[in-house]
Length: 210
Image (cartoon, rainbow, N blue to C red; front, side, top):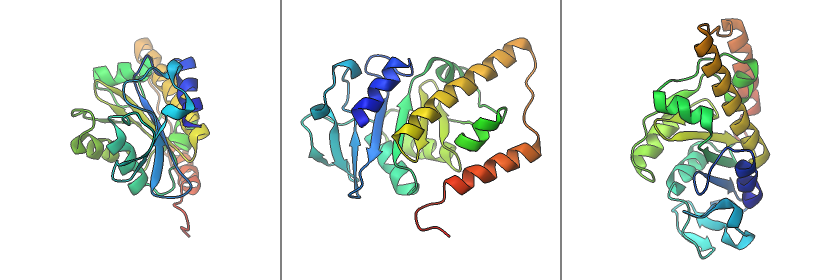
């Protein structure tokens, strides 16, 4: 499933070459499957997907796991309802990451499915604890964040939802950039934001939450 998701991202233009990474929490608990480091998505096979534990120790697979494994692990630790993480380098989201702009709540589906405004996290060196903590802070209460001068991270209850979130973030970034270029951005009303965030919260109760 991780391989299929990674190749879908490539086909949809949300990653290029070896950029980005994809992971899925495994049902057995305490393990995740993740794309390997520095490998072209169109050349990957099922045997190339790496399984690691939450200490980033390899369990299955011969290739080194993604350099961003620590970020994925920390998301799964902090967000028990999340079962898929995607780090993308899509064009419009990356443009906002380069110019240092966050995305206000401008679209209803943005709030319902991504949790509201899209925060921009500083981007320390890849694979570091500092990067993980910065991105986790930007992801608090939401399923998408931008990484300054880097790209974006999206989360999902499963891989299908994570891919959809990646596409929705790109659509939202595109709409925001076009609106800025036309000189007028209208954000949602406070009532619409509150309604959308309530729907998001209902869908993202941690397991066994009341």
